[in-house]
Length: 219
Image 1 (cartoon, helix red, strand yellow):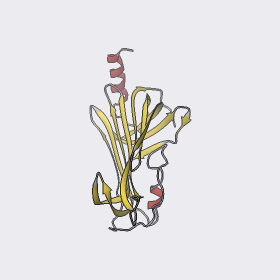
Image 2: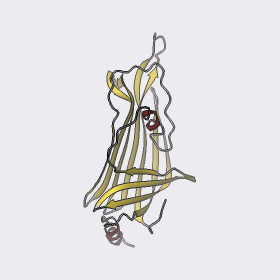
Image 3: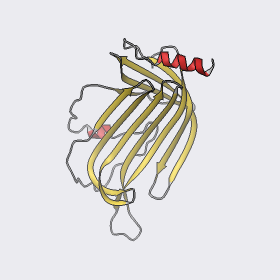
Image 4: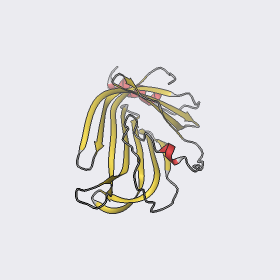
């Protein structure tokens, strides 16, 4: 199929349906991970496939499901669904804090946590659809407010953990861009220092791919 034919098929497939039946795409692309330490950043790149399911209701995309295959490894399904806001029960923050970036296990408990502010963590999800693209953004904040070194600036108020997900799916050419990030405050002790200071580090995982429509499937 030529490029114009592919664009026409994608435009038809990605038009919001009236029913809640999902539209399914299969994407082939490349992952990149960046894991930060105080002194360096390690990077890895590898190929992989992503299945994307879009669920619409009343001409709006209300749910996105992602099923990644990284090499020979099938990753857990990631589901992003719009729903009425509900309060976070006390004690649930620790459950939200684990595995912010799919496939990366970089989190660890902090010693000597000091609460600088006592405010409700933020958990926002936005899914938007235009004629050009379908976009998704989610921010999850968990843990206490701390003062840490951020981008070279000392004592910046920040949550212990801030994770984000950003997705853009082009309706015309089928290009897909995904970015998962996690900003985590860790203790860092300089040799000779009396006590450790806190520094915020950023881990990131990206996926860039080209998608094609496939038969409707459940995953």
